[in-house]
Length: 342
Ligand code: 1HN
Image 1 (cartoon, rainbow, N blue to C red):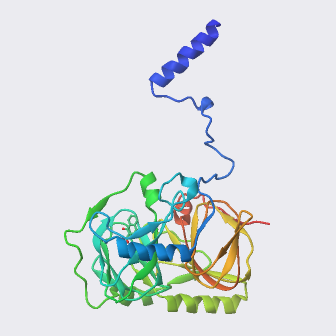
Image 2 (cartoon, rainbow, N blue to C red):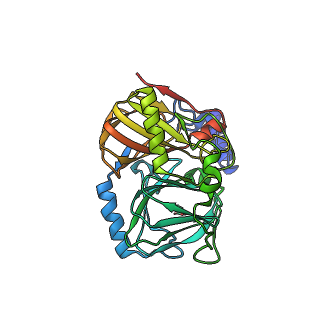
């Protein structure tokens, strides 16, 4: 060996001993020309999810410790982690008749999009928010929350959380409420009474505003969303119309980390891509989406993931899709990109 090689070998050994990694030898791709999400495009069928959630109701109680009866969407690209995408948690939650899920709070923020059933309310910092199919209910980060099913049937909803982002920031805190349930204020739906009429609940397309505070309005009703989409589709005549649910006070996304949209697809949509991840939940109607050239057929109750920067287009004769994405975080740091793809 030449002295040069010996000196170099010694140098690399000394670097490793000093817990240093020379950038010129790092083989994993750090600065990729474009996002390279490890999560893959994936669809979970409602007719697979639902019977499994029903079996969970029969077999698994909702208790302290487990806290929730939740089937998390585990993206096959993420090596067994319980995340739908690198930055997003998505899941189906089930609550049986006369059950409650214990009160707790955590720094990750959550949204619920109700799929089926009646009789559940989620109490958020004392405000009991009644849940009906098609409603969006918020539990902002660090708000106490518990779910109560007063009905005679099971209830099912989609849970979306920013948990993977908060975990990446090493910012997860969790606390149990001292009792199983919080006291509930009467009447229910106080946030709605106070805030629903004080500003718009949705905006066409996507909000450009930013707000570090979550929306004080905690419930967005299906009837209002439906009316907004119907009006927008009538005015624009477009095949695909979308509204974003917004904070009526600031016009920003509902949570500082998560944007929620409802899309009405009638016809063939055009392909777009955006930085950051998206989860879609089919509320009504059947159709299909093409993600990076791969076709995913869907029906009500299906959930699918569009990882960062992959082109997606939606196609249906008439369908409503709910979605969450992490765009408020990318926008807050000035790196959000969205474009049409030919
Ligand atoms: C959580 O608290 C809920 O409150 C749902 O319903 C899903 C997933 C991960 C961590 C906490 C809920 C969750 C969660």
